Image 1 (cartoon, helix red, strand yellow):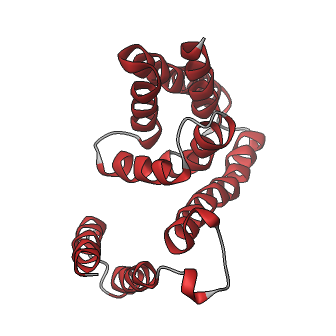
Image 2: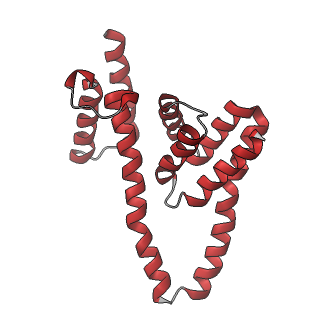
Image 3: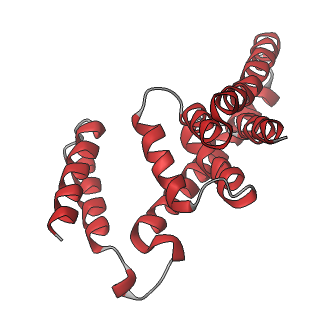
Length: 187
């Protein structure tokens, strides 16, 4: 039964995560944390961090991790297949439709209409992770004593560096991780 739940949850994630990994994060969170309670919000944030750092798509890395955590190797295989299958079906179907009807204005209109939705999904994921980082699992608070000021400072400095000098984001992430780790070791 759990294998079927894993397959169906990640099938839905694979089916509706249009726009890539970042757009899939709120869908993964809804299935894994909110509906099935397979992970806590803190564990989910750790999962996204690890899935982002490891090679491969976030949704597939997440499916593999959650599958192994819940049902071992069979769970990882079933969840990963569930995550991949909709993409294979959808991409094959869309490629056929696109090449057959690419000149139609309706097709171009649909593609243009999806762009704002994808931006909203990515913004939602970023905001959820930002709120968790700054205020913890309790959520948004106006009390400055409940805020993680180190996280806010690292976020602000990282955004400034990325916008001003446009370095490779991997170096900014690595630097932020090292500085954050050093600060928390000293505190």
